Structures are given as C-alpha cells and as structure tokens.
Amino acid sequence: MDIKTYLARFNWDEVKERIYAVNTEDVKVVLCKKKLSVDDFLVLLSPAAACFLEEMALMSQHITQNRFGKNIQLFMPLYLSNECQNICTYCGFSLDNKIKRKTLSHGEIVIEALTLKKMGIDHVLLVTGEANSTVHIDYFLKAIALLKSYFNTISIEVQPLEEEEYKLLYEAGVYSVLVYQETYHREVYKKYHLKGKKTNFDYRLATSDRIGRARIHKIGVGVLLGLEDWRVDSFYNALHIDYLQKMYWQSKYAVSFPRLRPAEGEFVPNFILSDSNLLQLICAYRIWNPELDISISTRESELFRNHVVSLGATTMSAASKTNPGGYAVDLQSLEQFEISDERSVEDFVAMITAKGYECVVKDWDTIYKGVKQ
Image 1: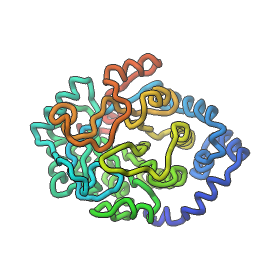
Image 2: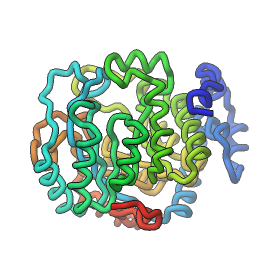
Image 3: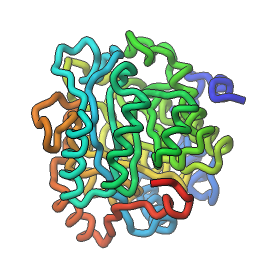
C-alpha cells in the first residue's frame, strides 16, 4: 500500500467531526494508556484536551527526559539559494515576488561555513528554494563535499528529488532530509500552490517514500501551520509518520512545527495557532510517539522557546538567518520568513545550560549507524 492509498481511507470532514466531538472522558481514558495509537493522538488534538494541557505538559516532559535525557541538539540552517520556480502564495521566495535572487557560489558557501564554525555549530541544515535548473543534485553534491570537512552532521531541506538522487545524497553523507507536505487537504493545497512542480500534490506526498527507500537515516515531516485547520492537518501528518515508521522502520523520524510568519507579500494565515495550541500539539506528538525528534525553530518567540526546552523539544536552531549568505556573504538578501527569537548562539546555549540541560552539537547516531560524513 502506498501513502496515497493509505490516506485515502480517511475523509477530511469526518476526521474533523471526530476531533471536535471528543469529550473530556475520552481524553482521560487516553491519558491513562501506556501505548497510544493514531486514534488516541486525534483525541489529544481536540479542543477538549486543551483543559488537560498542564497534565499533558508534565507527561511530555517525563517521556522526553526518559527517552532523550536532558539534551537539546543544536543546528543552524544554511540557506544556499532563494531562487524558486514555484508560485506559492505564502512564501517570500515565490517566483512572482520581484526580489533579488541569489545562489551561493562554492567560495561563498565556504565563507558561510567558516562563520558558522566560529559560532560552535557542528550540525547544519542546507536550505534552498525549488529551482531545478539552478539548485539541482550536482549543486547539492558539490556543496556537501565542500561542507563535510566543517560539519559533523549535514541535513537538507530542498525540492523533492528522485529516489536515485536521494541515494546519491545518502552516499555523500547526508544525515537527514526534511520535506513538508504543507497541507494534506488536496483542494486547499491547489489554492496556495499555483505554478511549478510543487503543484503536483501526489508527487510531493510520495517524496518520503523515495527518501525511505534510499535509506536516509532521518526523515523530517510537518505541515505549514496556518493553511488549514491545524488539528486535522496534524492528524494526517501523524498518519503519514505512522505509515512511514511501518514501511521504513530503519529510519528515524522528526516533526517540525512551522507556524506561518511574516514574509514578502501580503499573505494572511487562514487559521491562527496560539502558543497554547502549539504547546498542546507538541505534547500530543510526544505522548503519542516517544521516539519522535521534535524540532523547534527560531520562527517561535524567545519566551515560547524558553518554556518548550523542558516540555518536549529535542532539536532547536539558534541565531538563524533565512536568506542566502545571511551570516556573512550577503546580509541584505531576501529572507524566506522573519525569525522571532534573535538571540545569539552564545545566549541561547546559556539559557539551555541554566535550565539544567546540555546543548549537543553532534548526533552520535551517525557513528553508530555508519553514516558517511
């Protein structure tokens, strides 16, 4: 069974009705369980579960510390290009935005890498727009070859690729690949993705399968919170994770929570996710799936990130720049979105340490799994 067939068993409106029909007794039953199903995750997403947020937060804290210890893995995104062939109504890199486009040269990549190394960074996430003619597999492989001598762990978040291309990335030493479906609602997806390869909902949906078959160590998924009802979209995302874990059990899985932030253009989110909503969502994921890597970016505020350190997060970024060359080469190039937590790496690490946690800069799993670096 492929992911398209797997998800086709569920009807969006029926799932939504189920979520909003949950009552407090249903939540109590789920919170007493030792092992949860995806249906139980649905219960923890419900408005009824919001009344149990304090209990959920304590459970999430206990589960996270028991599985991951008091550790936060630190990473930083390295934007290589803002060129993009897609028109997506919510994104600053969208093709229809009249902005200065930039793709880092090999020399500029090295300059950015040196800047990050001076900050003490050893885990980098390579990010680009989706421009196959400019940032393609050959460009990625060259960038990885350049960066391997600077960083222990290299992850990527780029356009969906073919299985053979993911195999090349695996051989090159890529540790994890992130790809977001944005929203699992097919009709709504069409409204936001107007032009380019990204208009192909099914091709994007099947990307994680291609990554899994390529044996990438970690697969990251998520939805863009604000395009559709976050509760329903997150349930579908959990279904996707459940499917992937059964199909490609050798890989680890990560979930991210990109809330829509201001960017170039005038897009306004259709659904607003409050801080308490986001905390509920994070805790629901952790209680449902103790093995998940939960990543929190600098999109979120300093105050929120301070609190979530001890409530479920395992991976966090710091001092991020979301524009190509933003650390040293071209400070004024267009950002993909505005960040909220603007603290330096030093200040962020100090906060982590003050809370009794350790900031980890490399993932030892790469050694145990034999991933080439």
